[in-house]
Image (cartoon, rainbow, N blue to C red; front, side, top):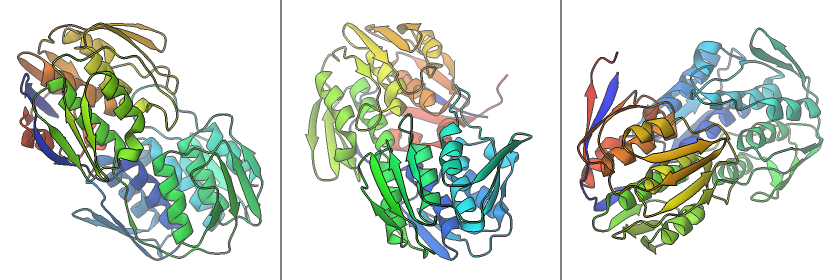
Amino acid sequence: MDRFVINGGKPLSGTVAIGGAKNAVLAFMPATLLAPGVHRLSNTPSLRDITTMGKLLEQMGCHVSQVNDSVTIDSSTIRDFAAPYEHVKKMRASIYVLGPLVARYGQARVSLPGGCAWGPRPVNLHIEGLKVLGAEIDLDAGYIVAKAKRLEGARIVFDTSSVGATGNVAMAAVLARGTTIIENAAIEPEITALLNHLVTMGAKIHGIGSPRLEIEGVDALAPANAVMIPDRIEAGTFLVAAAICGGKKVTLERCNPAHLSAILMKLREAGAILTVGPDTVSIESPPTIRAVDVVTAVYPGFPTDMQAQWIALMAVADGQSVVTDTIYRDRFMHVPELNRLGARITLTGNVATIRGVSRLQGAKVMSTDLRASASLILAGLAAHGTTEVLRVYHLDRGYARIEQKLQQLGADIEREKREEF
């Protein structure tokens, strides 16, 4: 397995381009099932998760190809309405095929999803939403089995705001008969981008960007091309990398600062100097990082996908900070690994208390999930000596060529292929 070897303590400076949003692509790809034909998705990063989704669509009969940053999907040859375990176990976003399959073809057999090795992310909101639309759903040997002659519009109220459930149910509702109302819908940029794309395909959706969606079902959609929005979590990760390493100015290009408001606010509180343009953000790290508390929340709050990276930054801050994750309460498997690098973090339930240290010390650490991997790399960049980050295949699910991008900013980081025991 690959590992990263990092010689820490190098200040970062320069310019880095942010890629397309992984979480947007993983919703747009299943949306192609709604309209037979050729779809082209541009500004798409080369990531393991996107390859996994492509293989899943190929299993169903789609023709999928990726050239550079463009993915082309021909969904006119669907012959199989099942998403088998061997594909779905690798990635929770595979559940996104459920709504489109039931809406377009009246049937689906989708394995219960897998993905990162932390905590349950229940799919009950997806299932209950489709049931309200009239789908008959059973669980059979680890599979969700859904059938419907044609879905019927209805009013759906989510107990909690869920990006995945909002996307899945909305994709089903666009082909349902009648009008569907979704209350407490997610408003994350990735879901807003998906809904706007469905409109481009011919869907009738009102209230996009608000917690209340009104969807008038149509008889058919048409294929459409799309350009992916920038990845706000990749952008946030590089901003924290610049802050934790110090040095001169680092500029992010091809990002959307409007999607980063909560992250930028917290970085300013920590003492970073930020300059924001229409599609750029420049950051200068202060001599001393101030300790800043964070509570994760649904968008536009501080994203749970930045929680691990923020803890890494607070590990070298001046003072004590508290990080509370209200979205995924058990998403703290990176904490013991950060402590191996000399961090002083204690964990009580979903609350991490971080007492900043003047310097971290390089060590061998192990990735457990995607964002935990990013936090360990950030800590390694700031640590004295050499840090080895094992099992970086987790990181390859969500960051394209991260070591190359960090290298161009001045980091001493290399990818090595070695056996691990």
